[in-house]
Length: 115
Image 1: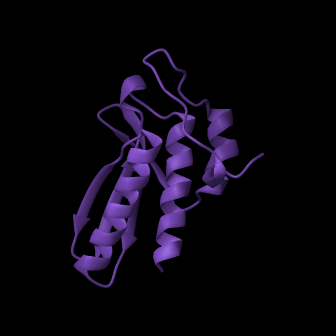
Image 2 (image 1 turned 120 degrees about the horizontal axis):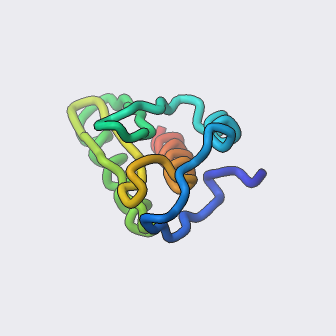
């Protein structure tokens, strides 16, 4: 299987299928530090990254935002002093799609590049 970080998001529509439990079992090992959480009845991928100051977190937030814009898939980002919480899910299907796993892997790569 090609690494998630090297894949591109595909256009998603309201009839697109959510990932199955089997797909989650296949994809999740590539993003081991992410949690699958339920928010208002929808599954989300969520991770909080730690930073030494606000500016480092803001730089990370901006890089994630630029990547999200390039891929056409956008997260929820909460930037605070010393940390950034990132949540990925697909609004159109009210849950998780393969795109969310791809973007979580790309987010991890951004964090590694800035470390």
